[in-house]
Image (cartoon, rainbow, N blue to C red; front, side, top):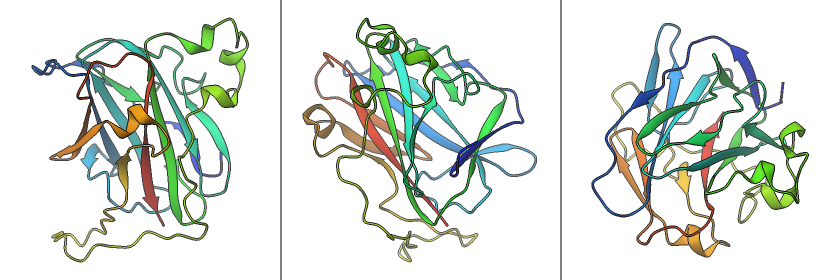
Length: 223
């Protein structure tokens, strides 16, 4: 259990295939779902979540590699979210397949001080947990610093989500435009990524073929 994310057994995980993008560029797609008590529903990545909301992510890419997800919480802790024994250890991704994170029958529960959690997504062409330089990585809760994608600049302490009144929401949802997928300012390859919102999913694409690990952040706003 963590102060921000508590992994709880709840639901089965769907694994589905989808068409690979017809574009020649490397492309990733990420969406967030919230459990409403009966069903999982896709939500806007910029939505300000409430304490105890149950969420999960869906991820898809048009290239193969290995996926790593870490979280920097509002309580100041950083830890590996995926792969991990209780969230799924099979982190290899194949082109065109959709994966659920966590990849076990569970979810992430929102908790901790109000603010923004910084969830970092790293896709590597090789399994970095099995490199000779880090032979013990699979057994660690928090991976070595050089394997952990971190925020380019720590978000200001005490920064709180704010609703954008210019975005109309029939149900009165609070949407913060500073939340959602973001590039890392201190990473050249990340800065070159293009971020596009498509309905309730976010598409991240690279204008040129990726030659190494790619990383970006997902700012999760919550009360």
